[in-house]
Figure 1 (cartoon, chains in turn blue, red):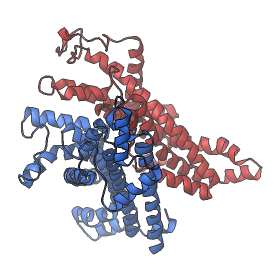
Figure 2 (tube, rainbow over the protein chains, first blue to last red):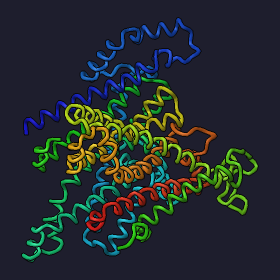
Figure 3 (cartoon, rainbow over the protein chains, first blue to last red):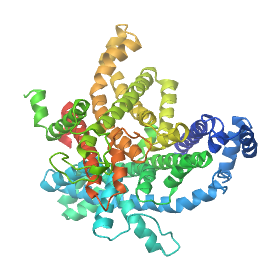
Figure 4 (cartoon, chains in turn blue, brown):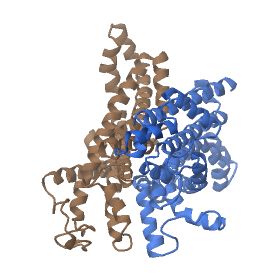
Length: 316
Length: 278
C-alpha cells in the first residue's frame, strides 16, 4: 500500500507540475507582453514599458514561473491588474459560493441517482425500469445550462417561487444563500444524476446475481433488507469511483451555470477577468480549478484501492 | 439467425438513434440549399412574432425566422462535432496504437501525458484559448478536440492491448510481419467497432460542449446562427417570449439523444453478450 501510495503521489505531483507549465505557457508566455494586453493595442510604448517594469514582466519567463509557483505554495497569488487587490482574496471570496454550490449539486446527484438506480434495478425489465432508463437518456442529453433556463422559466417566471438569479450573500443568514443555490445546484445535478443512476442500476444488477444474495434471500431476509443491507453496500465500489470523477465535472459545470444565474462565483470571476484582460486572475483561477480536478481524481484512485485491494495488484 | 440489418432495425435504441441522427444531418444539409427565410436578415418590424404560416416558430427579437435559425444552427453543431471529434480520433487513436505497439516507457509516458489532459475539461481549455486568442468557432473546435484526445488514446490503448495478447497476433509475428503491419492489418480493424461507438458518443458530447461555449459567447460568433447562442439571446427575454428559450434546447437535446442512442445501439449490436447482461 505504501509503495502504491508513493507512486500515485509522484504521479500527482508530476501532473500538477505539468498542468502548471501548460497554464503558464498558454496564459503568460503565449500572449506576449501581459502589460500590452492589459493596456490595449493603442497604449503608448513608454506607458507599456513602465507597466511592464512595475509588474515585473521584464524578467525572464523561467524566473516569473518560479515566482508564481513559490507564491502559490505560500498562498500568495499576486495582485490583480484590474482590481489592484490580491488575487488570493478575490478567489477565496468567490470560492465561498462555488464550493457550496458544487457540494450541494453533488449531494443532490447522489440522492437522485441512488433512488432512481435502485428503483430501476429492483424492477429490472419492467415498466418502472424502462421508464427510469428512458428518463436518464433524456437527462444525459439535456445541456445543463438549458435545464437551468427551463427551471428559471418554471420556478421564477411562472410560479415566482425563486428569484431568476443573483446571490444575496451569506451575511443575511444561511437560508437565503442556500435558497439562491437550489436551482443552480439542481440544474448541475440532473445530468450527473442521470449518468450515475445508470451506473448504480447496472452495478446493483451485477451484485443481485451473486450467490450471497441468494443465500440472504433463502434465509428469509425481506427484499428491502437484501437490497439496502447486502446489495447496495457491495454495489457502491464503481458508484463511488464515478462520483469522484463527477465532482470534477460539476466543478467545471459551475462555470456555465454561474453565468446562467448571475452568481458571483469563481466561473464569473474568470469571465470578468477575461473581459478585463486580467490574465493573472485567469491564470490562477484556471490553475485552481485544474488542481481541484486532479486532486479529486487522486483521492478517488486512492479510495478505490482502499476499498478494493485488487487494484493495487494491477497497479494503475 | 437473422441478419445484422434486421437485428439492428429491431433494436429500439439503435432505430430511434438512427432516425434522430439522420434527421440532424438532413436538416443541416437542407439548410445549405433552402431555409424558409434568410437566417441573417434583420427586420425590426417583424420582431417577436407569434408562430404563423410564414414563420412556423415565430421570429426572434431582430425579426429573424426562428425555424430558419434552427435549421442553419444544426450546421454549427455538426461542423464543430466532426472536426473536434476528428482531431481527437486521429491524434488519440494514433497515440493509443503507438502505446500498445511499443509498450514499456513509451506507453507509460503517453498515458501519463493523457492523465494530465484530464485536468482540462473542454470548458477550461476553451477559456484559456479564449483569454489569449479571443472567442471564436476555431478556438472552440481546438479546445473540444484537445479534450477528446486523451479519451480516445486511453480507449484505443486498452482495446489494442487486448488484441495484442491474442494468438493470431503471435502467428503474424512468427510469420515475420512488422509491428506496424500488424497494427494496421490486425489491431486497428479489430478495435474499429469500439472506436465507432466511442466516436458517436464523443460527437454527442462535442455538440453539448459547442452549445455551452456558444452560450457563454466563447464559441460560434454572430451572425453565424448557433443553438447555444440562440439560448443566451433568449434568456434576456424570458418574460416576453419564453418559447424562444425552448426551441433551441429541444434541438440540442434531440441531437444529443439521437447520437447517444445510436452509440448504445451500436455497442449492443457489436457485442450481443453485453446487451443480454444489461
